[in-house]
Image 1: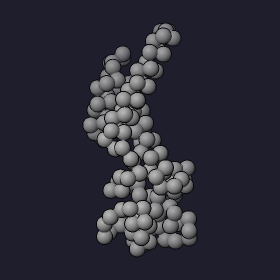
Image 2 (image 1 turned 90 degrees about the vertical axis):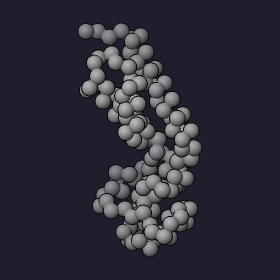
Image 3 (image 1 turned 120 degrees about the horizontal axis):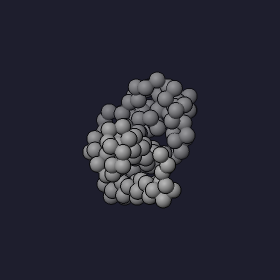
Image 4 (image 1 turned 180 degrees about the vertical axis):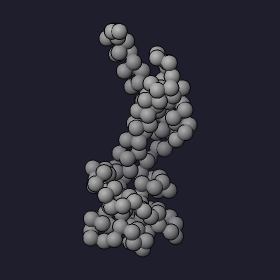
Length: 142
């Protein structure tokens, strides 16, 4: 079965339009991803930078001090409990300054959610189904 080029382009345009709409909605809800200090990204960033300076990425005092420098309020640090090899996986993002790193991490996650919706649609919906319902289900789950 051959798929016409215009149909493929139309599907790509629909996915792109859905991504833009989702990005705009996320931007409206979360205008500055770097200011979302209550999310768990700050723990990975601070642990990475503490380890990079030769410190212990599991030291609560060091984590709390650095998280407070970034503007996080609270008396307890958000601790990273993952093994240190997580730094290898997140290295391209974690080496950036915090604000840029948090924004990249946030938008990569949004794109991964869109990709999950596309895969979800291909597995559980009939061929040719619109992407709107899987996107809605995916973002409501998030």
